[in-house]
Amino acid sequence: MAVPLPLILRDCDVLFGTDSLKCVCEHLELSPDTATTTVTTFCGETDYPGITKWSLVATFVQSFDAGATEEVLSALVDAGLPAAFTVIPYGSQPVGPTNPSWSGEAIPVPYAPINGDAGEQSTIDIEWSLTGPPVKSITPGP
Image (cartoon, rainbow, N blue to C red; front, side, top):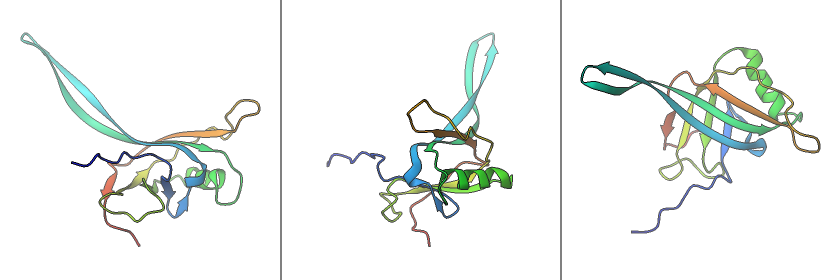
């Protein structure tokens, strides 16, 4: 068996609609959080999985350039609607079995527009809930 190729995040793309924030993204994750319900009886305790909530978690370098961080994210927050997103591990390659995409809708909430230390880059951290589980696709889009 060949050694599996690990995913190294150096070409990952994150799109909101058709706006790519690939070149200002430093950290990216799709995170499930499953609640646990504990049932206690005279025979002991048993944990059962409950509802799973998903989040899009990302860190972006702040940029006020056209089509960059502030313009894209602030427009999503101002719209007050769920925002379509797509994550592609190898953004410069077509989506397929070895390069799936995940998409869904995130619920934009306000973020700190300036965040950092003296002499360092300003970053934006988001943790936006999804309206449902992300959808994995191995079919190239348009």
